[in-house]
Length: 231
Image 1 (tube, one colour):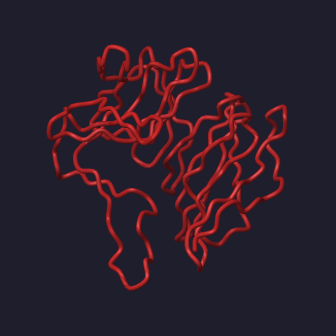
Image 2 (cartoon, rainbow, N blue to C red; image 1 turned 90 degrees about the vertical axis):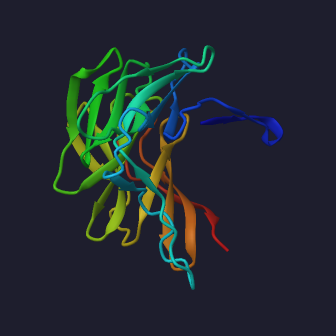
């Protein structure tokens, strides 16, 4: 992992030898000194292989590049002040895509194509299945303002979709049900009302913003704004 600053300056945060550090995410205030990430440093068995969703598909006249992670991945916490690293999860199966609740007490992650939450104080003993379905569910993103909302990606009907799960109502809702192409990698706006996603169309990839929640955190289906179109 590297920390990139102004003028593209970078400082190295981890030195794990042959192991990989991936999927970093900052913890929210007042815990900003900590970064959660996944690594195979304690289980580098190359028989387990994970290909990142939607990477390098359909590039004209080229063989699509494949980005894969080898080994079993667990969640770690990095103290950027001291450089100390502590392991949070211990499991037979990989934990991927950590994301932290707004109060910094819980973590959501993907394991075996389902979305779970756990207490950061006891990530292996306080685990709750949040989203379990016959599909592939991954890439949870916790809303920074409304703690009851978690966005995630779902693969079904041969495409990636973006959904939102309401922890209070115990209900899930598609963000873009009318889409027939991939909509993936959601990221919340700071006010918790909008999701920016990567959307695939015949011209390539572009960024699209979906209005998802009102000012009180109630789910809604609002306007769609196209931000960036690929050349």
